[in-house]
Length: 404
Image (cartoon, rainbow, N blue to C red):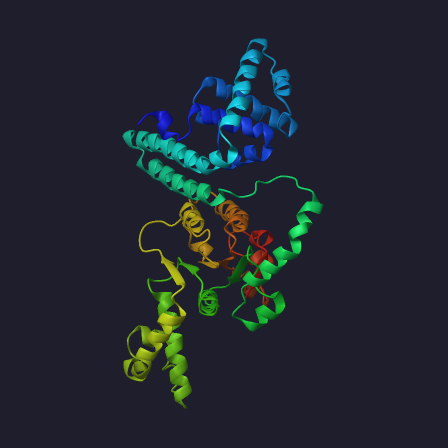
């Protein structure tokens, strides 16, 4: 397989893409989303044109309105003629390759180019004995592949008349209402009205205050009421813990409803987990298993069983959920493996990135976080926004911050 075949686009098609960019600046924005640069292009002449267009855009915040405008922008007299001839070919190729056809292939072009360049770099790192650096590149490439897949077909960023934007506002609000998720805790539902489709909720509490329990209750409630896919990243829990806690709650509720005067401490998750409640719960086992299979078939859990789970892995898994989920819960962000150079900055960058991703993913994300004991030590019953562990500005980027 030749390099050109691997890159998916022929030189003529690449010319057509640049030709379409001159006519429709939004196409240029799409190329930037895919991190296209001059190295993607098959010829030096095309690379020169692309670089001049990028420089023009950087200086004037727009693309040139005509071939003559970009030619006039080129200071080198010898290069002017070459740029003009290449741009003329781009405009001609545009007629032969309609954009609706090229658009279907551009995702494949972006992905194949990424795989081609990343594979060479990863192999080189391994040959040099830099195995850890190679693994970092593998993770980054996997995330980028998922991102390319997710942003394909999105409306690019850019200015649009407010009068145009407002035309579909009522319809959008109606759709958002249909997709709003109710909180499992009535008080939160009353105060907030629910979780909008692109919200990022930061849910914090001190150690032992019930963060995981709150997250588990919310995701279980959402799975049961929506009967649509929801996803729970159980980064702190042991394998099967979320499912077991839900099942234990169902068992315990039935037992308490049927028995009065239960000895204090008998019915507890710890006793059930240690297999000490077989006699008490035996009558409810089959009934609960049948109900669990019916109500929680759309609940999906992710457990970290081995190795690191850092920001790159989280990004990759979230991108995979584009169009596949109604809600994701990350429990919790302080159990992500960070590189340790600057934990505050890493966490701050993470929540900003997740806030940006939520608009593309189109489902809400709940991030459970740890709150320090500073407020408790100062006899403050209510935690302060600044008490989120490691990054006091986490709450600034989230759309809703909840503290228990």
